[in-house]
Structure formats: structure tokens, C-alpha cells
Length: 182
Image (tube, rainbow, N blue to C red; front, top):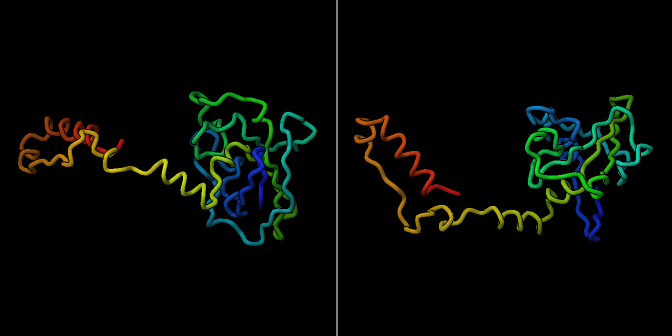
């Protein structure tokens, strides 16, 4: 499925990826995904896909879970209600637009409808340019990993640790915080 965004850029999304990231298949309190890509059945197909204004109730089907509140920026969850107490993203006009996908399966009599937040899809698009950019932004360099600025990793003597485990635990954990990845 190719989605066109406001900035006139397009990105492809594969059916198994969309299916496993269906907002209605995320547990509302734990955030656990209830579908996995491995559970996708190849007889499940995208019947139709359209961008809709979710603020217009005429575009919505009864009982369908909308990705609202919208997921916080950077969230891997396609719906924000998992973060209801600490979402840093406020609803806006752009939040009212969703990708509406209607699924059909040869072994089901009824079709299933999923709504995806467009901003969330934009953040998680996986074309090569986006993957390279995300990797560059999240890559941990040696300089970041060793915050102290020197090239040494803290080392500890096992016998010291074993003889004084209670006090040593704090020192060990503090060194992980100070010299570990940020």
C-alpha cells in the first residue's frame, strides 16, 4: 500500500506490517500487541484504503477504535491511550486525518476496518532513506557510550565485589550510569 502524505512524499507499507500494527489490536492498558507479523494469514488482503477526516463522524464505522488520543511522538504504539497519563502530544487539526484500511479475508464473512494516525505512519515509515536516517539518529557512538571522555571502561575485581557485595552493588550500578550508554 502506498500512502501519500501532506508534504507530497510517499511511502509504502506492507499489508502484514499494517495488520500487526492495527490500533485495535493493542491492549488498552498494557500496550501489548495482540497481533504479530507471524500471525498474518496470506488470505487476508487490503480491500480498500483511503485517508479520512476522523473528526467527521460520517466517515467512521460504529465500534471501530480510532488512534486517539494520538500516540506520543516517537512511540512505537499506534495508539496513545496506553500513555493516557503522560502523553506529550496534544490533539490538533492534523490528528483528525487517518488512514482507513478495510481488510478482507477468504475465511471471514465480515471485513475488518483499521484506522492509523497519519503522523504515526510518517514516523514509522520504513523506506531505505527513513531507515538510514533513524539508524543515524539512534546510533550509539563510542563518545556517547563513554560519557567520562576517557577510553577506558570501568573494571572491577571480582574478589572485591564478592567480599563486599552490598556496598559494591551501588558502585557497580553507579559506574553503569556514569559510563554506560546514554
